[in-house]
Length: 137
Length: 193
Image 1 (cartoon, rainbow over the protein chains, first blue to last red):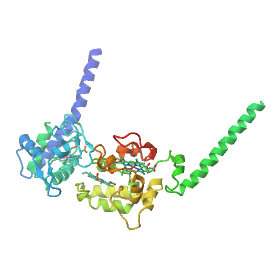
Image 2 (image 1 turned 90 degrees about the vertical axis):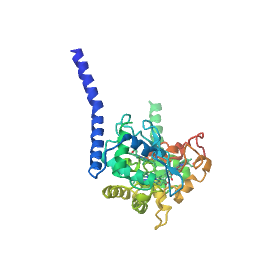
Image 3 (image 1 turned 180 degrees about the vertical axis):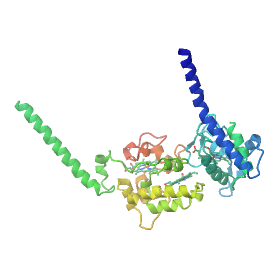
Image 4 (image 1 turned 120 degrees about the vertical axis):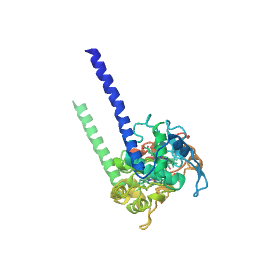
């Protein structure tokens, strides 16, 4: 009796852990498929990492900007908004179950952050590479 | 017997007197904005602005900074701000049109010029009719309330950086309370007038 209870509890626990992972994975996969539909792919996490580090001098203030400006180098720890100083939750899905769990949120922030960081929108290829990198962190 | 009776009476009298006082000060306060600073003690339990009660707003307008209460700016300011999210204080905060509309409705319906809360009325009154500032921190009301703070406590303070970060000094800002007795400037001892 006791052991089956334990097993049940264990099973439930694993299930609970797995649910957010599954939903994150499917959300990211859907995004990747939508990029492929525009002719992009295959995607590379390595390329994504290079893009993540890529530094661009802003035309607006002459300062260097990159994705790390707010999110930092370690995606498993919290970032800090460059201007306001507000804490940004880690992007790594492994430590933040909410990250990459909504397609709408991913679209919104890609649009804003690419424009702000690089002064232009990201291409579907770049987005695919970046997501492949971020999801593995 | 006699003794307890007179005790009861004195309690009733004291209560009546106190209630009367509260009533009077309430009347005085209800048509002041903040020119009766000396009476502020009476209204400490009252909130300064209506707290944010909209989860979507908190999520969308609280990701880069503290989600400011709609009651801190008049409707015309919110309208102007929401019309220019692509270039939002040198930041890109753009949203889909339907989301912009939903948030604009929430902001304008609860704006300073439609609210009865003390600070909302103070801010609203400190602005000219056609004035639509994009910042709370540049309104005359705000400046008057913060003129005693030197740069070293704000702009040059690495733990604060900007007046826009209300919640860092006003510990109960999220609950809509900005009382000067609940202020603590990070890196400095308790604020004391």
